[in-house]
Length: 89
Image (cartoon, rainbow, N blue to C red; front, side):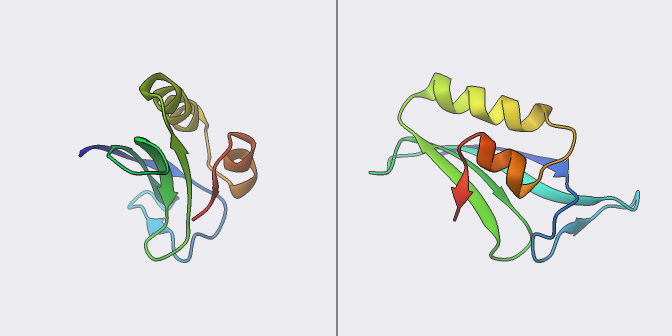
């Protein structure tokens, strides 16, 4: 399983958020390659506990495109992640 993780800023409450030394609130965005019946590629966004959103995709190119679109957003919210196809996990 390969994993890429990045921190992105947020204005929503992800129960809880990651507190940055710069005073901003962050969450983790991850890209996994795995063998799973739901799909072989997972893009997911999580706070520090059990609040997250995910999208399983069958094709690498599709999943990478979504991951990069998420990473390009200036601030992640439940609304803009839903518009990219991510659902509550």
